[in-house]
Image (cartoon, rainbow over all chains, first blue to last red; front, top):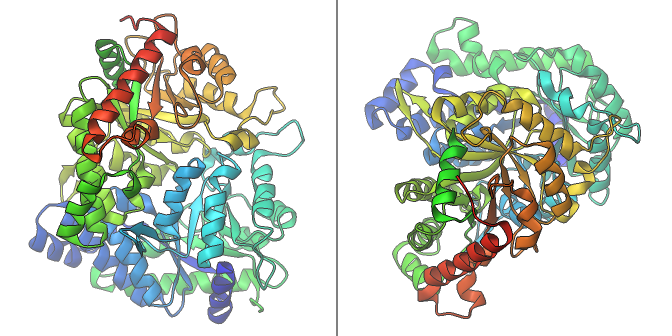
Amino acid sequence: MAFDRLIEKIIEKQNPTVAGLDPKLGYIPAHILEKAEAEFGKTLDAAAAALLEYNKGLIDALCDVVPAVKPQAAYYEQYGWQGMRTLAETVRYAKEKGMFVILDGKRNDIGATMEAYAAAHLGKTEVFGEAVESFGADALTVNGYLGTDGIKPLLSACAAGDKGIFVLAKTSNPSSGELQDLRLETGRTVYEEMAYRCEQWGEDQRGKWGYSAVGAVVGATYPAQLRELREKAPHTFFLVPGYGAQGGGAADVAPAFDGNGLGAVVNSSRAILCAWQKEDAPGEEYAAAARREALRMRDALRDAVGEMRG
Amino acid sequence: MAFDRLIEKIIEKQNPTVAGLDPKLGYIPAHILEKAEAEFGKTLDAAAAALLEYNKGLIDALCDVVPAVKPQAAYYEQYGWQGMRTLAETVRYAKEKGMFVILDGKRNDIGATMEAYAAAHLGKTEVFGEAVESFGADALTVNGYLGTDGIKPLLSACAAGDKGIFVLAKTSNPSSGELQDLRLETGRTVYEEMAYRCEQWGEDQRGKWGYSAVGAVVGATYPAQLRELREKAPHTFFLVPGYGAQGGGAADVAPAFDGNGLGAVVNSSRAILCAWQKEDAPGEEYAAAARREALRMRDALRDAVGEMRG
């Protein structure tokens, strides 16, 4: 079970952090940008090359202290297919360095189309009789608005390839409540309904610590809902965005964890990526600054959550 | 207003069809596959080359009778970044041929990230001080589960670049009702709530025929909901998937249209793409067979909907 692999890394490093790799050229130090522009000009190829070098430096600096990375597909897509090539290369590099890779794509569609997304990100695509891995993440974030049809192909990919998914339940953004907090006739909220579905979708694929291959996204910015859903969805592993730049702190995310200090992985993107800018450090130190911020986050989470026990 | 441009093409061709470009190697005739494999081997590059040649043939055969194409991102993503390169080239080619391009990505995320998706698909990305178009569609399908934050960056891109979006309301798949049909405390269903949001999000960007830049996806497989939402969301242009292979017919989609025969565009993917297989035609005739199917669909819609009047 994919999240067993993630949990093992979390216990080993005593760190339930995932570093979000959401790169923009504006976050990247001048020495990397200048090299890329000199080689490729003012082009998407140059942007993609700069993103890749920046990501590799971050992965090298983080891989012994952070168990997982979460590249956000949008940031690569905005740099065209060249950016998507960097995404594929980033996933491969992070896996080579022993990291668990969560692709944040929030993909969603009807069943036949979801098979294509499952092949793209969690499985393999048949190409002239050969099975080829296109992007190859360990887990994918998905949107469950279309119901079970849109989830089933992912469940097959999870079972076949030891992969996981995170379904959006309660997202970290200010307007997440507009739809997600609406109360249904049944008395449940929409986000609660989604968490119950996660419990159902995952019931045949539970791992060593009781968590299934179907996780949920629940934002650090909503600690009361984190606590509520931790109780109501005890087999659902949480991906918790919204820590750091979006305003969530270590105390806010503590309710996402169970009595063994397990059950969630907390994402920070900008606070780690842009630590060198925040520290006013020279650009050459961007990776060292990211590592310092990741260690601060690890320690803060460790203090708030306690020991992660296997 | 982007949908004015689409409506003009619909009126000119008297055809409210969008041809879904959801290619898989299994749909592509042998002569194209063999050429690609001979040049690039059993690789993603070969797959991407075959997809592009296939798409260009379809676009050439359809562009004078069909106003729009809808490439589905998943089918390109499954062939890796090479597939995404074919997606970008397909969008460019279809626009050159005068077609309106709806990218079916169902993208969704929090505001900061949605800016990146908006740049990727509807706007431009800043690259070393230059504004570069990465994919360049006319409209993008999106999921509104995250609320207004996730829609606002798209509204800005629509206003700045004469673009449109389609927000998922009632999707065409069998399990769409699991969440979308649930009734809220207020008495509204979730899909109805989403359609009302579309009316609100679009109210500042209405065009010549009263339709805004914020459309909605409503499936051909649910004619009662099409009729209901056409009444309740009179300024919301509909993208109607599910015609043909998924089971919707011309009579089913008729309620999506207003008294002028406007207000919706109906998608067919497999029935057009695979017409040559269904007709048992030689592979060399795949584009001609697609055109024959598109003309049958145009005539069936024209019979059911009546004249499209400007």
